[in-house]
Amino acid sequence: MKKFAFVLFFLPAMGAYATESASDLFTTLDQDGNGALTKEEASVDSRLAAVFEQMDADSDGQITRAEFDSFQGN
Ligand SMILES: [Ca+2]
Image 1 (cartoon, helix red, strand yellow):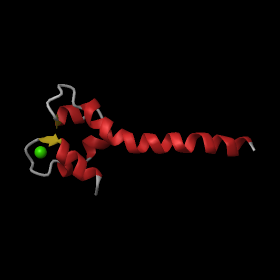
Image 2: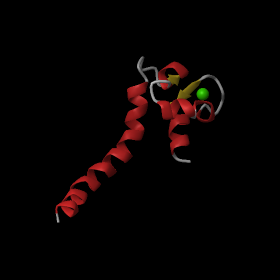
Image 3: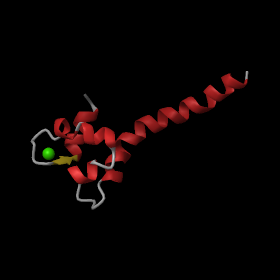
Image 4: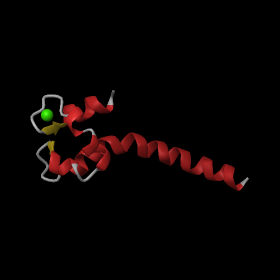
C-alpha cells in the first residue's frame, strides 16, 4: 500500500520534469545567454556533449535553440 502511494505521488512529478527539463536545459546551459550553445557550454551536460556533433545540424560549432528543439523532437 505504501508503494502504491509512492508511485501515485511521484509519477506526475517525474512527468513534469521530463517535459520541462528539455527546454530548461538549453537555458541553463546557455551561460552567456546568446541563444546558442558552444561545445564548451554543452560539455557541462555529458548526454548533450555526446551528441553535440549530431545536434549541430549546420556544423557551425554552436547549437541554436532551433537545432536543440528539432533534435529533441527526433
Ligand atoms: Ca549549429
